[in-house]
Amino acid sequence: MQIAEVMTRSVDLADPDMKLRSAAQKMQKDDIGALPVGENDRLIGMVTDRDIVMRGVTGSRSTTNMTVRDAMSEKICYCFEDQSLEEAADLMAKHQVHRLPVLNRDKRMVGIIALADLARNGAGGAKAALKALCGIAQESGVPRRV
Image (tube, rainbow, N blue to C red; front, side, top):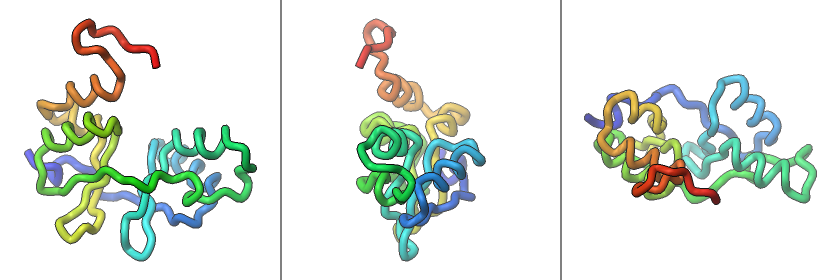
């Protein structure tokens, strides 16, 4: 099964100059954990709830004037819509991410796929991706402390 068959197509891009507080409010309102960041019709980053906490709330700067650009992750892992669900699961496990922006072959964002999408659709690698993300030791099944 291909990623295009299960991905979420309606994804809003955050503007990098959007206030961090506005991004957090949007994430809360939409009940999502991440927003892709776009500029000039290109994907340039991703801001997650964790980014907001780690780079914003716990940082030494005041978050009042912080923008999405200040907190976003610029190195983005992504997949292509014509790849298999197993390939998406492998990428998530390798990079320890919960979601991937989905691009077409022109490198335009066309959606997003989450670990939950893989699990719902029986992707063979979803279990391995989940184990990698949760830090579960494969031998014992006991969560590791970090």
